[in-house]
Image 1 (cartoon, one colour):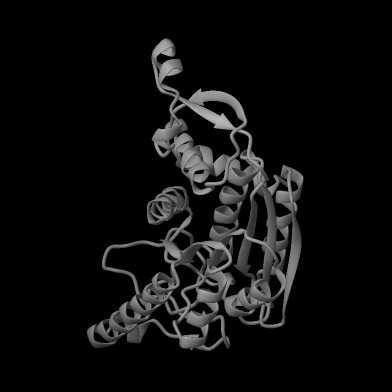
Image 2 (cartoon, rainbow, N blue to C red):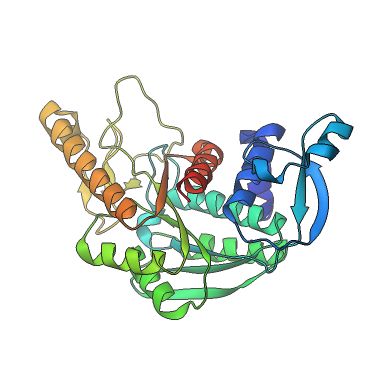
Length: 312
């Protein structure tokens, strides 16, 4: 069986051509602002690099922009924080299992960190408990982190509550890290907002939300992955197909979703929840991105890194 990291690399090659991958790599590098004055080498400029790092004399000789690279004073520590509760075993907006999208996103960010010589650790779990793996370097270590997420996220897991993993991080993780949080569509509340402000005072935080499956498809749309008639979703999601709630296995019949009134009320509630979550994260100084499927991950991460750089 192919390793999870190898799958991540393959999907990066599929979803992003060479120039786009270079831009993504440049955006990641720009997030880490710490540097020493020890010159390392030159490399080709890619969009997203800091203009101040261009070596103009060398660029003139070479005929194209070149970037000065420096030896970092220390490695940055990237902490992947994610939910492995059963909510992440539900279907996403694309029809894929949320866990698969999460593993891809964590893998891409972790691989970028590895390429830049950074250390990568993991905090994950559900309401039954939180587990952590210390930050290390190397592809073998990153593969292990992805396998932990993949193997622990299933319908038999306890319910999801990313706040538990965030509370563990605030309580147990010392020093300043770059936190990359991948989570379900959480609801905003005062306690979570306070927790996020506490975390953002210590760490840089990037947040990626994986979108829920919809109440019902728009007319003429089709599923990306066929889950059959026993589809598990955060909401009922497909006309003509009954789904089941991951929270309590309750039947979510599709017929009510075809009512214009039900659909309108659902969309309003979803919009209000999303607006409250975005305001909560923004109030804590956290940059958020959203993806609905694996095809969105590369572009979603690039946009997230770019917004974070501009916000800083």
